[in-house]
Image (cartoon, rainbow, N blue to C red; front, side, top):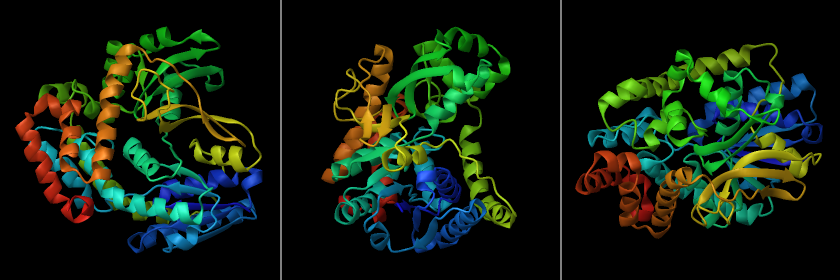
Length: 432
């Protein structure tokens, strides 16, 4: 029986989905799943526990599930730890990450990954991530540790700096590959690809169907007005850079200097995105309770495996040993040779009984490397600033953010950074 701990188990949809996937592997069907969250998340963690128990009962799995607020007790002798925490459980906590930069012209969409919004979200998460790392090193030092918490690169790097060999996981690579496959009318079983870069800005530098380059078909497909409208930012990036990027148009519009520095550009490429993001987050919070009630009320639930990587990785390492290929986020140890050494990169990896092994990529196309280099350096600068408690390093990370630099002067960025420090000071003890 493998002990699998999910920290941040109040993330209802993720927790129930990943637990369902784990149990679909015969070698993991008797797992002991332990859910951990804060008391504030009790309602959602308990809902997760109930739906996982229903999954166990319906699938007649010899597994168990339990829920606790005691993280240290949960981590004792754990075989695997999944980290999926959020530090902005209220709309107010999340909203200031968007509203303060917007005052200075930095109009972001979600703000959970990079730029001033993503950096301060990371900084607020750092104290609890450090505490989790300390507990893992003491209580389950040999555990397989997988991180889903955003901002992916900064959180993963920070935990690595604290001595935990964590690998960051995202769903953008498999999601985008499926989307491109649908656009060109291919079958996923015939598709092969190579993808690398930094999280949410990794690029498919090779995409083939039955061994043939599929990029001509992709370029043809995006001439369809409906397809273009659905992903205008990413399609424009492909036209400009030659390759398709992994994360959505909304996110990528805020990572670059090309799409959000003027209102006419926002209106052209991703209209209403700021307002729609606030509405989506608000609606999601308002609808979450009813969604949980509806799922719990169902007599039967689907036991079919989903598309997240974690369960197959766990099975490869500590289950039946079936090799599993995926894209993960790890330090750049000359894996991508024209990106900065030591920064977090997203590269192909192989999971096996030997652990998680990253694949050497070599050089990315130089135009992609140029874009990724700025992002990777900003993120690592923010991590180093957090570790040092150095506000000036955080400012330096923000001044190099492409969108921020496109719309603000250095003095304006200084004022914005100080305002964000003030708004978050209660959650940033390392800077006080």
